[in-house]
Length: 116
Ligand code: FES
Image (tube, rainbow, N blue to C red; front, top):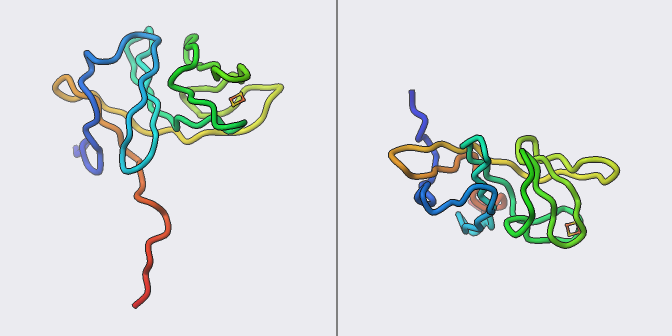
């Protein structure tokens, strides 16, 4: 098994408070981390698809976050905005290893200049 392949160490698990989001910057991306009440960690884009609300500052309920700006409800598991609103945010793999949270599935900026 290589669970740490392409995963980035981002924060100590003890620095996350249950149900309280935390913003981290990884590879120039703003990521919102959440420790759910069941002990699982979720990592999603910190930008609400509506008007870029900072989701790390939203209210967490179960596996959902409510955007602090206009209260859209977004799944922290699938990234899907719940009806009646519409949209989706990026979700990332997480792992907890030796007391640290790791995030996977991040990409460097898509467009590298590949001129040869
Ligand atoms: S910016 Fe998130 S609901 Fe409007």
